[in-house]
Image (cartoon, rainbow, N blue to C red):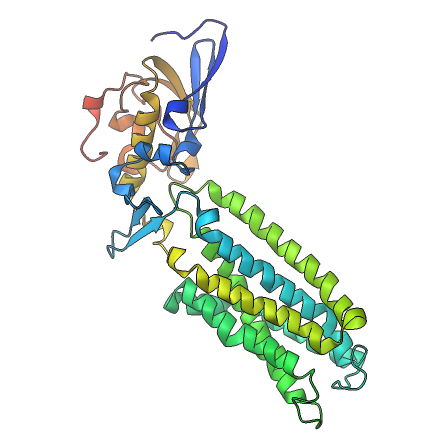
Length: 380
């Protein structure tokens, strides 16, 4: 083996391949930290690192995933956050603003604090019971969204939740705050109950089960899996911002700036805008891809093998590669082997059909050099 230095420490970057991975050299041993290469594809310069079968050659969505059972093709963008997820985050922001804007004023409305001349006249206990029941339905009905998604797909199920339940529910709730629209008769308690206890919480439950997952599905499940963590950080930040602004804004509008009816029109109007934004991104969304478990192990291995070979071609040396040796249902100790960085790993190094490891190149179990000629047809 060619030593890259004795008692020295060097760090260099493979910039020519658009990677952000480093080879750390110490005492002649090289630890290749490139696990995220194959699951963080976000630059055009990284496309040559992945197999041809995972490239769509589409300028907007160059990453490809094929469902081997149905033959369906799914195209992914290099920057999903900018390409499609942005629309989903806007909807979630406005939905949380709407939910908490209504939620934190309903008790005051039902008891007549915010609208002394027009209200259902509930006692504090009854008003609290209504609000609690509405919350209970919202948090126990996400399965409705899952049921719809299984039959309609995530995108259509979200539209059903918004247009069939959520927006009609808050529209009716807002309608009950206008005495003129109710012809000045007795307060429409039944209409309020339908909106507050059925439509609104059902819509909330549907979105809770779907919209965050739909956003995560905009990322390629193999080539961009490490980017999903960052997505969820931004997703929950969006939730908190929307909730905070809604809690602070609507009660102030209802008590000091305007009356309750006009205050309730604000979240209603914003959620309708959110629906329009969501529809505007229709052509950018990726439909529900096949389950990750359905992905062929050989295809997964091929991605990682090709990526490792392309990245390794930047150097013409031989090094020790330290990786984790994964086995079915258990993990053994990390072991060390010898492999040629300038050549493709052999079948033993990439694990073959029985490998569950996501790390490449894997160590050679026979402690031998790897050569391109040793790669079996099954691994290609």
